[in-house]
Length: 161
Image (cartoon, rainbow, N blue to C red; front, side, top):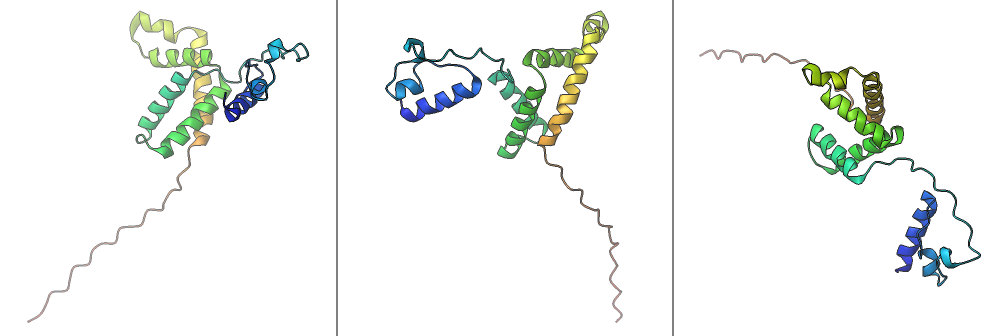
């Protein structure tokens, strides 16, 4: 394995609190921790801070960019920030349930009642609304430009012969 890649994987592994066999140890010529009897026991796995899958993040960013004027790097950076903010505030399970309740809320009739009536529907929709409002901090606030009053055009003076 490339030593730089092995080092990067080792750093990521330590940040995530997981162990990847044969990474930095292998790059340094040491056997993987599992076969090293003096190796420390791995810390118990911590739950991930945000568990949003890549596909969900990409879908959010694509929709966000479409709503904000199209695909460009400026929009992408702000939309990525927004999905990161939402992911830090909600688990993916809660986010996907909140989206379902939000999208299906306007379904008419008895079938729509299953998405409007449960108490958790309002709770999830409100949590998603709050997360989206907090994610608005990722987008720049444009300064309002004062409107200049229109000056009436003055007609040219008639020419006298």
